[in-house]
Image (cartoon, rainbow, N blue to C red; front, side):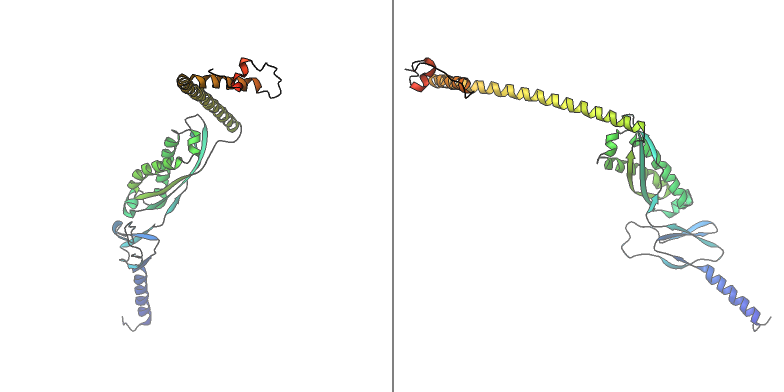
Length: 279
């Protein structure tokens, strides 16, 4: 055949275009790519690197051997982990409906590909592990703890535990949070609130009783200390002691403010007004 044959030239040109089109592929900034040669991993392009300097990337156009190599793309971004609501039995025997969410990323694309194959399967595995861990950890808490700020420490503990398992799938859990932790609606919710109210009232009564006991102890100690001080003072000055006792008697007698008392000027009760004490 002659190369001047236009049909042959078009066929050759078409074949070259097909080879060129199947030889080039593009990896975006948000992707990691595993190049497979005859089904076996050969190289990784634009893999995630936690220490990678800002702006450094291997994303762009790359070449592969047509028909011998194929490319598997894996997301490089932080992904959401969808989780169904879980019903957890707390230590105070309350059934709590927990709505949680998590975020993760694929940090080792080759391990992820060899262990589960796709991101979706990795997410399924992580979801099962996280669900189990949530049920175990939250089941060790009471309902009040699930609503308190301290539950952030609990979430960190769960995240660390799940991350150890996530390494088998080349993934890393970025965040775990509880969006909602509610009691089921209806009679169980009302009964739970009533139990909580009763428990808080009992705790309030206990605190008030303890406060009253401590107040009595403090008053008794203060009275004893005052009596000691008075005794020391009276022992040093008998005239002052008589004066103090007279003032206490006057205060008791005249505290009404409207009483009329008729006494002789020479009455002993009025001797403090006469200046005859100790004479």
